[in-house]
Amino acid sequence: MAESNTEAMIVFCSFPDSETACAIADTLVKEQLAACVQISAPMTSVYRWQGEICHESEVAMQLKCSAAVYSALAQRLVALHPYEVPELLAVTATAGLPAYLDWIKDNTK
Image 1 (cartoon, rainbow, N blue to C red):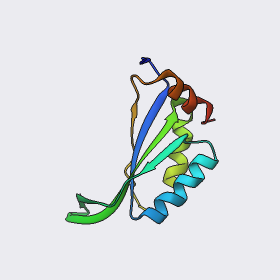
Image 2: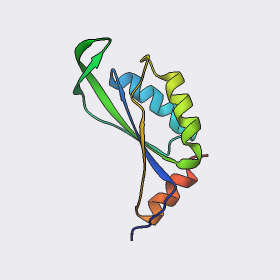
Image 3: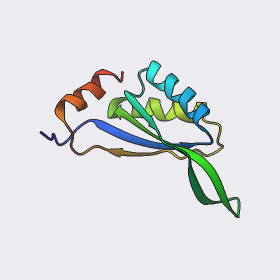
Image 4: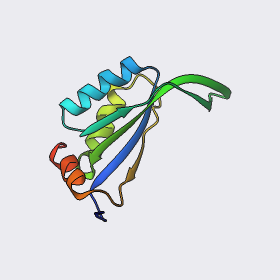
């Protein structure tokens, strides 16, 4: 049931709160830059920023998109994001249910 060499991508990003994440998720799905967005419960992120160790409550977002729209998705996400340097990591899906992969492709343009 798995298909390899897909054109689907999974994009990871974090946000300061659920409201911001939901608003941006709505925009990205409406604009067909993401087929699906999942927003997690709050988590604690520990990182170094401007020489200081920070502990912040954030929510994680996973977006599913086609590789063809990734560049546009990344540009739009950075433009909408409230952070100076938002987390933006993307990986290519190496396999998946063919019907789901087709659905991602059909819902991102």
